[in-house]
Image (tube, rainbow, N blue to C red):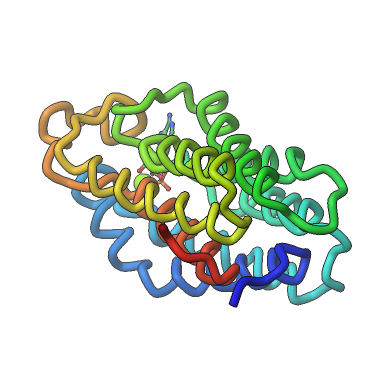
Length: 216
Ligand code: ADP
Ligand code: MG
């Protein structure tokens, strides 16, 4: 069953994102231990726990954009590290792209993922192939656009984005990092998946699952 992508869905998505980040806390820590400083799981878990606490403390906001804006503000103030400002910018740009629409249709879903991706690139200046979360967000945005243009519904747009993000995260494994902390390792960064690309894939996967989307 697909769901209308309304504010209630946005809240559900973020709750599931917090759950999946908490469940994968150790995985994300271990990935970041291999090529960074072992804090990505902790940073993300702290941030999303704070986001859920904040959402649960208030009324459901009136638009999906208002939900995502609140998420952005909380992530920016609680996550820290490189990922905090990057995810904060992603959610803020996603919110802005949605305007005051009460529901997200297929085109808006694709535009939201593109806006998030573009925000991360504007903030972090990484390109595809630099072994960062951009390597998950970029194929996700491309797949979302293709799906929307092909007539998919909004939830299936999210499902295609999630599948592409997952493939993109796996494909970071052989890459040599050129941005962020992992770039200090040079060639030794090869052979490990990028933690931010993996967390991106997890968060988009639950976006699709909560919306009831199916990949083609
Ligand atoms: P820190 O690197 O400060 O310890 P985290 O461990 O929480 O922060 O996040 C690391 C992740 O941030 C990396 O796996 C990568 O995906 C992402 N990242 C780091 N720098 C950049 C950048 N310039 N552009 C995009 N993503 C980046
Ligand atoms: Mg780290």
